[in-house]
Image (cartoon, rainbow over all chains, first blue to last red; front, side, top):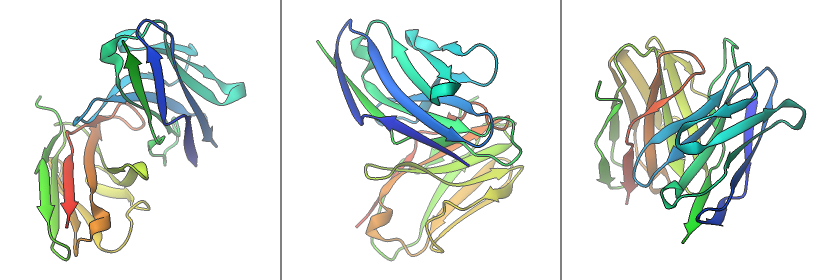
Length: 115
Length: 113
């Protein structure tokens, strides 16, 4: 079984500052990990994903995340926040190549950007 | 491709009425998921299908909820009878490969009065 915990339901940073959104996961099998972004009144869009291989994953809009197995973490970062980054961000996990897995989402983190 | 299409976009109904939400996945996608999003509970997986067959419905809250996928291009989520606590945004998503990127629809905002 898989689960996801996102630390902090709301994060606020200044424009140009580092963005760090935290995600810890639990999985009984090697996981696939995802970050999705949701803009107001829209569905979720994939930012980036980790399946296998390189643990540092780069996504769209300058975001990246690092898979750390020892810490069971998959934190999302961006060096310099932009006003357009204001949105809700969801971390998700699935059971990798397991034949009977499903994609489970965290509770989300709302990112606000201060001018 | 037009993406995942959900209808209606908004639904307002009275307690006790039947509600049917509709979803058209992306052509060629073998997996279809129904999620519910609320402030209190976040994004919850209700049920998912593979090749039109329900694989896991453990997230369906109770017998008032049912979902069908009669063919590869159409799925419904039905609530009968509806209750105020069912008010939420319901998302449909599809993917062409297990455990890979999900493509979400725009959601149905359901309000049960």
